[in-house]
Picture 1 (cartoon, rainbow over the protein chains, first blue to last red):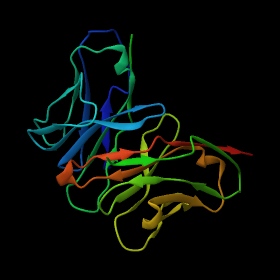
Picture 2: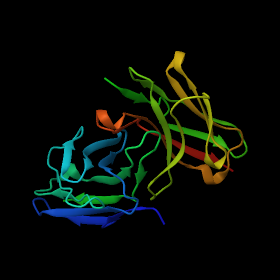
Picture 3: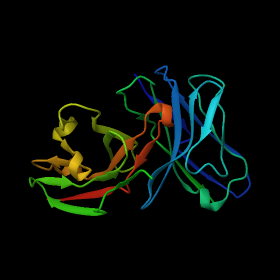
Picture 4: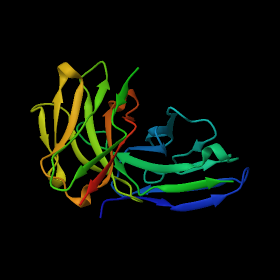
Length: 113
Length: 115
């Protein structure tokens, strides 16, 4: 089954404790992206990647890092989480061919206390 | 700057009634337009998309949307709402991948369905 998976689905952590949220897709998509969803703001892009070793900032990159060492994986790293990073995070992927939409993972709900 | 506006934060309709969710966008070029649905505790599922051609597009679950360039709108419609349609709906504009490829989302419209 074609899908985007994220782990963990739920995470409660404390300020300053480094964490990684994993994202993996099995569709051989070139493009992967991270979004955060906050009430009243919709989803906003954090980082994206066009292919292996190619990443770039989205609209709200501060406090986040990403890496793309393999085509299928695109982890999101919070080196020193803060309470304002409490949010619902979605990973997405798509092919670079025209006419194709982004596929979303199930989301990771992160709480930073 | 590109943006998407969903004017209605929350809408309540009776089961069996018709539904229209509004979406207005600001985008210089021909937009790629999407409607996604998010059920409680779930990820986002694509309902329908518009890239070009016929301005009335059909999607899953009986939804349709009409692209109106003159009004910069892409409203979502359903003739008869079911209780299972209660969810949050997001309109989005997609930038081409050579411009970053991101989706620009509206704020979302939460739909409640009365029995």
